[in-house]
Image (cartoon, rainbow, N blue to C red; front, side, top):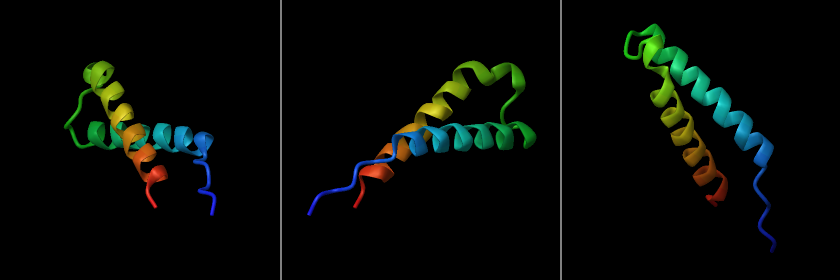
Length: 59
């Protein structure tokens, strides 16, 4: 049986939305300040992408 290919566009969209929501949530709760978004934002988006890729290859 062939394994379905991951939906790359869905993974990218999910990564951006999840990362944006996480950054917003951390900013609203005072954990992350707006001036600190450079490297921290990039790392959060990278982590969300890795999780998304791992989830797409699971199963």
